[in-house]
Image (cartoon, rainbow, N blue to C red; front, side, top):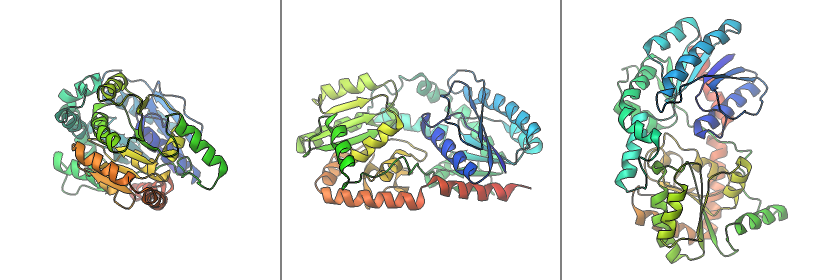
Amino acid sequence: MHIAMLSAEYPPRWGGMGSTVFHLSAALAEMGHKISIITRKGMDKPPEINGVQVFTVSWKKIPMEFTRSYGKYALRKLKKINEINPVDVVHLHCPMISWDEKQFEKCKKEIAPVISSLHGSWLGERDGLFIASKYKESAVWANPNDLIMRFTAKRYAKFENFAINHSNICVANSNATREDFLNRYSTPNDWNCKVIHWGVDTDMFLPLRRDDEDDFTIYSEVRSRFNVKEDSYLLLAVGRLAARKGFGMLLQSFVKVKKESPNSFLVIVGRGQLRSRLLKQAKKLGLEGSVFIESSMKFDELALLYRVSDIVVYPSYYEGQGLIPLEAMASGTPVITVNHGPLPEMVDNSVGALFTMGDINSMSEIILSELNDKSKLLEKGRAGRNLVSEKFTFKQNAIDFLNLYQSIII
């Protein structure tokens, strides 16, 4: 089968969408299928995968509007690819590609049926920013993309409406995302929308082998980099340094954690424009020397950090699914996250804990409660790894999507 995937983000370093497209295409190629990826010019050069060919197209570097220009050029490239090697299924990754009704119908008529993956909604992203503003996250509208989204999300949501009304099948990455579209958009009465949770790389994200001498050496070396001694706790938070991710509230919560558990340290890893603001906030809160912010880190280094942390905290105000909790769980590290949106679909008390979104005391109390029982943390870490291995793998994603592809091929 020849599957064409259109994704504005590729390869993995470009967020969750880039990661899922990379790993799904690799898993499908390993099963013997041919994959053509059409993405934007200017992305990092991806690792070569047998059976996967990557094409790049132009796009206008205008916030939000790039989704239209990329969509137009991607369709042109798709048509040329199809002329050389007929495509069986077209897989769009929304919302970062915006097709109108004519483009969808042209694709279905002249090329192949369409599956649209719904990674989240523009209206949901915008609401996440409003929630961040409500809880006084710093620089909510400092990012030009976020500022423009505030005023244009409704306009670009109409293209998501085209996707749900003109795709052969839609696939939401969580039940929360599916409900989001049902509640916000004009879904047809016979809307065919499945739910497939994305998996993570269980070969890269592995638990620490606590009885292995080499792993113990790495454990000590990595933790000592952040002044974490043998009797101390390392908390990790990962995600783009943007207001929507809730790191400002995490810092406020960590004040109480640090007061009750002085030997606790927090590392935040993520790219973005808020690093200096967050460091200033940490200093103002009296957390200097206890909070570290890493703006750049290779995947293998991040995997090590997941592995040697005691807890991963994920305080995001909005996610379509959110892969960070699964990466932590695959690494054998318990997760503390919000009792909101899609997060409870992956995290419960058996693998971590949930706190009330926007409630600083709830977050700090849950963190302290988890830190008080280290043996319980190890137990939850093992349970998290087992859960990811059973339910959240790219191999299973490939099987599930392949079944959907085959169901719409005429």
